[in-house]
Image (cartoon, rainbow, N blue to C red; front, side, top):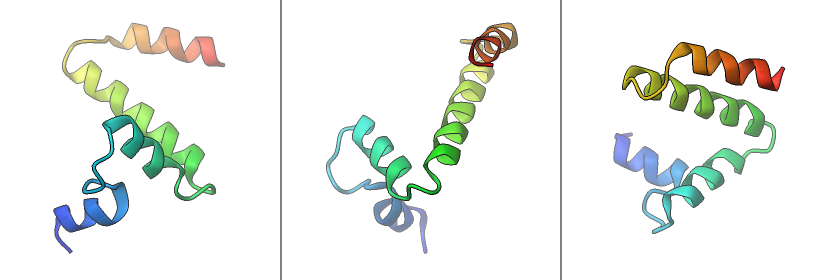
Length: 68
């Protein structure tokens, strides 16, 4: 299966949804996986922000301390 077909089948890419809704619907389509998918998405987002130097590790550490 190619990437476009996979995205259409699993992430609502061809449904015409706003980005926030695509993300929300993708995360919540399987309630058993929702917490893990949400945590992974947040982790990936923070990693990308760090790589683009929009966020540094000390800020991420501060956020992690706040949630513990």
